[in-house]
Amino acid sequence: QVHLVESGGGLVQAGGSLRLSCAASEAAFRDLGVGWFRQAPGKDREIVAVIDWSGSDRDYTASVADRFTLTRDGAEGTVFLQMNNLQPNDTAVYYCAASGRLHPGDSSSYVMDFWGRGTLVIVSS
Figure (cartoon, rainbow, N blue to C red):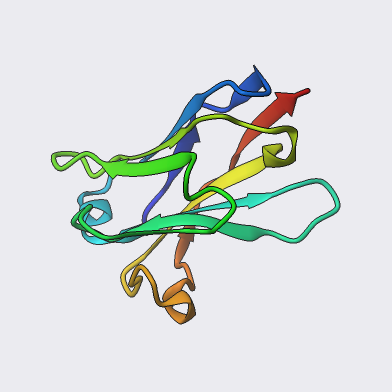
């Protein structure tokens, strides 16, 4: 079992930035691919971005590809989602998830084994 903890959410004005973090204390976390998902009020959960276990391969959904950046800390495996030029339609609960079978670019592999509780991002206009 891997316990994921998200942090970094909050309230920001349109055009602003936030950096979300996804961390876990279990050593196994470093060997897992990680994805960020979000769920806006009244909408289905959607994939935002994924990164492989090594941090060398990433995939982004089209709506964020030119604004969000995923990185990964090599020592602890912590994953960071840098979100720039945030817009009101980015408002959602953002969830971190992990899987041992994740392959960036292959959406059929985005079936996650472990989930965090989410962190709320609110972008005001």
